[in-house]
Figure 1: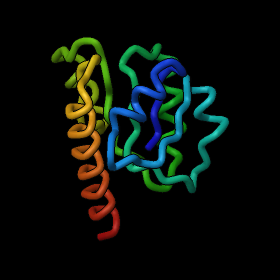
Figure 2: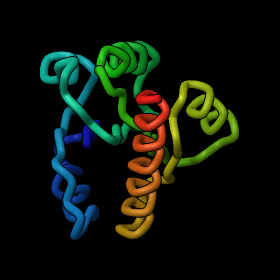
Figure 3: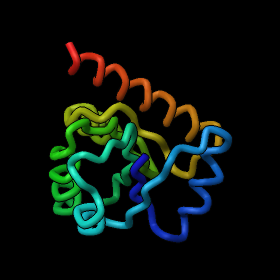
Length: 126
């Protein structure tokens, strides 16, 4: 799982993911993602903040688009507006989660995103 979160939230996100503990790759911004992600990496889920600048979004989107298997996109934001939801869905994202979120909310959202990834992968294989 790729998680674009500030360094001070990483321990919290790790704890919130609880018992299913996915392998996490934390990055703080799009330039860092471009430096550490390779096209043969596989991330079932990418947890991304809605608060990224337009430039950071497009840079990050470009990095994710180069992956052989693009991840399911899970966006977190302080507020889930219709405009945000429609934008995320239009770009192929699978969900928006309102931050702050409980352990259970994050776990359910990640599990839904994993299911989206698996469905996309099944369609690609056909």
